[in-house]
Image: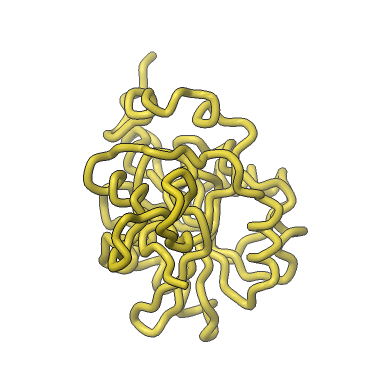
Length: 235
């Protein structure tokens, strides 16, 4: 069965109301992804309904290096309590994204100290922390180097909370725009595998957030509240 290149869902041609629908059997994208990519039009909301326990269980069963993506702008919502328990024995690289949205006065060292302090409080162990940017190339080479060190020929599974920026980061790593990117939580609907530079990459559905304004705000208002440029601190 063919899957959508953008979100990983199985394509189907019968029911317009179900995920994966496309009217064209030769299409590589479902209608939902096509509308998001070309018109920023959310036809079907999927920010709720994907079982986070099933996502974590699937990842835990994979022999893979884990690239865990968090959003520095919404860091607390991106934490996954008990990730060591869920992914016991896994090598984890933490990519802390959207560094370029934070004020220039915040140094990389201070941001890293904050992240490591929160990881320690949660009892979470990682192999490496890498700061990345939403609209720049910062951190990409460091991630690739870390994958070479820890990958050991295994697939790289990219995981994180909904709207953390997994697909955006993966597109930048692959030098591609194949994966659907949007501001809406729940863009990626299923495990989506691709090959590049001798590495198997696996995009995953965003793990549903319980404690974020993103899940309570009307989706048409997300463009207003989510920043797209560096924040200036106000005193």
